[in-house]
Structure formats: structure tokens, C-alpha cells
Image 1 (cartoon, rainbow, N blue to C red):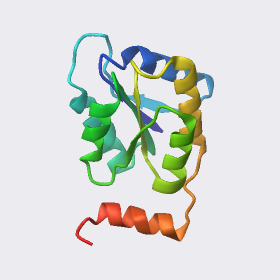
Image 2 (image 1 turned 90 degrees about the vertical axis):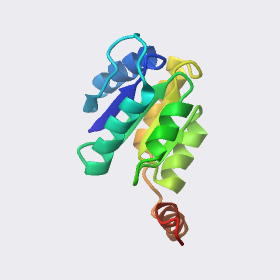
Image 3 (image 1 turned 30 degrees about the horizontal axis):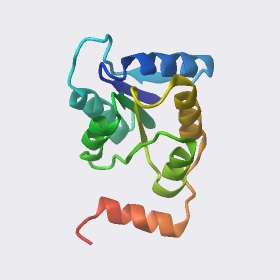
Image 4 (image 1 turned 30 degrees about the vertical axis):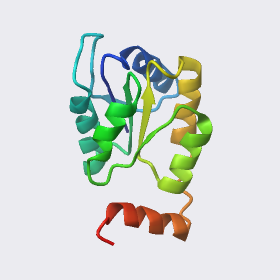
Amino acid sequence: MIGLGCDHGGYELMQEVKKHLDKKEIPYRDFGCYSMGSVDYPDYARQVGRAVQEGSCEKGILICGTGIGISITANKMPGIRAALCSDCFSAKAARLHNDANVLAMGGRVVGAGLALKIVDTFLDTPFSEEERHKRRIYRIEHPEI
């Protein structure tokens, strides 16, 4: 299950992402927003982040105007590793090296065609499981080290 969340700046792109996931028969839970009316992105980032934290969603996809605010908010949550991606290389590296569990994108930055390729890359790329990457992720999660 993929958790989806966006603000008004990401609403249109999220509609494209949902159509794409439907076509690929990938289940998701839509945490909103549900219109182009102005909303506060932290509310949606936190809802998706909580779903990933508790395990009801394996991964999340967040979209705001730039992807910056929504990714900053998600990354404040323990266990969330949100990667702001605007290209497929970054999406692949975020999964392979950082075991990112949330993809963030900017609805005013990335066009729909590229965004869907980024989504596929993010969802289809497994974590490498290499010890050096596990060690680094551990150090992210344990800043006292």
C-alpha cells in the first residue's frame, strides 16, 4: 500500500499519479488534499508519514508546489526518509543507497510524464542491502553517534 498526500500545489500532479497507480493496479491510500483550494502541506505530510511509520503503508508519495516543504516536514518524523526527486537517477539512488520510504516531488517543477517515470523508478527499485548503506542509515536514525 502506498500512502499519497499533497497540497493544492501538488493536487493536479497527484491526480496523474493516482491514474497511473490505478492503471498499474498498485493499491494506495489517498490522504488528500482533495481540491485546488489552499491548504497547509504539513498536515498531509504528517498523515502519510504516520501511515509509513506504523506500517499501514509501505511507502509514501508526497507532492507540493516545489516538493521542498512537504519533504522537510516528512523528514522531521522518526523513521521517515523522504527524498525530493526531480529525476530518475535521484529516485533510484534514494532507494538503492538511502532506503528512502517517501518520494517527494514538486507539482510546479516536474511535468506529469517525467513524474510518472520517477514514481515507477522509486517503487521498482529495491534497497541494496549493502552494509555501508545500512550503516549510514543507522547513523541517520541515531544522530547521537
